[in-house]
Amino acid sequence: MLFTLIVPLPTRVCHLHILGTLKRGSSMRRTRRSRRDARRFRNSREQTRRDDLSTAAATLTEESTKRQSMREVRRRSVRNSTEIVEERSKRRTRSAEIIDATQHERRIDATQQERRKIKKAPSVAPEVEKVVADFVKYTTETAGIEGLRKECRVVLDYRPQPGTYKRFNACSQFNRYPEVPCLDATRVVLQRSEASDNDYIHANRVKLEKSDREFILTQGPKSNTIEDFWKMIFQEQCAGVVMLCNFYEDGTQSCEEFWPTDSGSYKYYGKMFVNNKRIDHLDQYDVYTLEVLPDGCSNSILTRLAHCTTWPEKAVPSSGRMVLRLIRWTQSLEPGSVAVMCSAGVGRTGTFVAIDAVCTRLFKGFDGKVRDVAIDIRRQRALSIHNELQYFFVYSTVLDYIRAKMPKYHSKVSRFYAELSKV
Figure: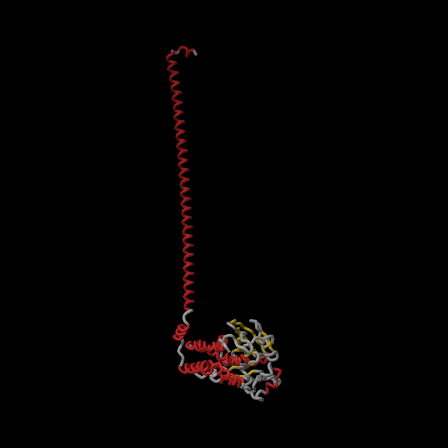
C-alpha cells in the first residue's frame, strides 16, 4: 500500500496501459480463434453438405441407371413379345396358306387326279390286267344291273338235294335254324374221346380253287354248342375266327356269348379252357387274342378272333372297305384254317368268303366269275349268300378293291355305283 503511493504517476499509467494492451491482445486472439473456429465449422458443414449432395447425386444417378435398365428390359420384353406375336401370326398365315393350298389341291379336277393316280399305280402282270379288264367290262357294260340280277337268281336257286344232310336232321337240338341245313359231305366231324361224345357241329369246310386258305363256315354257337365250337377250333388248329354278327340283333339273340370278353379274364366251357390274353380295338372291329386249351392237355393254341359289329343281318354294310380290311387281316394270320361265322353262318359268312375268293383269283391272273364262286361255296356250305343285296355287294366290293389297286377304272366303277344306288 505504501509502495503504490510512492510509485510515480507516469509509471502507474504505463503499467495500466500495458495491462490494457495485454488484455486487448488476449481478447483479439480469442476473437480470431473464435472466427477461425467458426470458419472451420462453416467449412466442415459446407463440406459435409457437399458430401451429402454428392452422395445423393450418386444415389439418384444409380437409381436413374437402374430405372433406365429396367425400362430397357421392358422395352426388350415388349419387343420380343411383339416379335413372338408376329412370328406366331406368320406361322398361322403360313398354316392357312398350306391349308388353302391343300384344299385347292383337293379341288383339282377329278380327271387330273385320276391321271396322277394312274402314273403312280404299280404295274400289274399282263394276265392280271386281262382278267381284271374282262371283269370290269362284264360287270359295268356286258351284264349291267339286270344281267347281274338274272345271275343272282341262278345262284339262289342252287339248293342242296334231300338226303345230303342226314346228320343235320338227326341232331336238331344243335341247330340254330331248322331251315339252314349242314351238308354231310363237308361237315366238320368232331373227334370223340369217348363213345358217348357228340361228333356233330353245324360247320362246313369250304376250300375254293386258287384260294390260299381253307375256311370253316359255321353258325353262331348256341348255349349247348359252345364247348363243341372250341373243340373244333382246337382240333382244326384255326389261326383265326371272323365273327360278323352281334350277340343280339333286332331284339333277338343271334349268338351266345362264347368267349370271355374282358382282357385278362378266362372261362371254362365244359372241358375247354379259354383265356382272353389281349384286346386290340381297330377301326370297325375288335381283335381278341385267345388261348384255347382242352382239359387234360398241356399244349394250348393261340387264336385271334375279329368281331365286326357293323354288318346288319340280311343286309350289307354301307361300304365294302371294312370287309376288305378284314380280308387283309385274315391274310396276315399264321397258316391254318379260318372260321367265319354269323348268326346262321350262310348270309354274311358266305358273302365274306366270296369276296375274298374273287379278289384272290383276279389278282392271281384267273377269271373271277362271281356266279361260279358263289355256286362253289353253296356246294360246300348250303344256302351261302342269302339274297340279291348280298350278291350285289360281292360285285361292288370287288370293284372297290380293283379301283384301289388300279385307279384307271375309277370312272367306270363310279358310274356303276351310281346305277346301283338307284336299285
